[in-house]
Image (tube, rainbow, N blue to C red):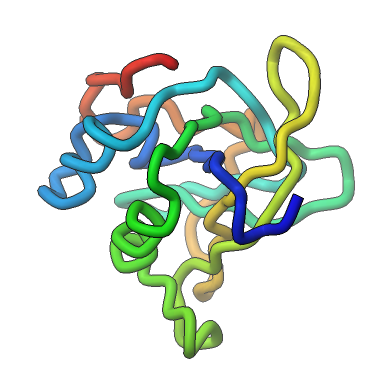
Length: 146
């Protein structure tokens, strides 16, 4: 499948919840996104303070999160790119980079999805569990299931 047709997004941090504190993103998460289930990707997760960041890894480490089905990918990704500080025309200046990845579904199977990889100066501690659950008083309001 061509990357331009991807309709799934793997999330592991603030986007796990339907209340990020950013109005445009919260509206999208309620209207245009559905939770497709638990999943993981190859990577290492870091606690960066206010939010986490994932880096690619080939050593067997996993980042655990959720796979989201995106109803209107072009529109949703345009808004999320701003939220994640992904600059399509200036990727080196971006805090996060959006890329395609294979997400391993908790129930079995693999699904191609977008993910935002951390691209900034690494600070903070590694989260060996690969999970960023409810840190710093995040909302527990979940995204609606498929």
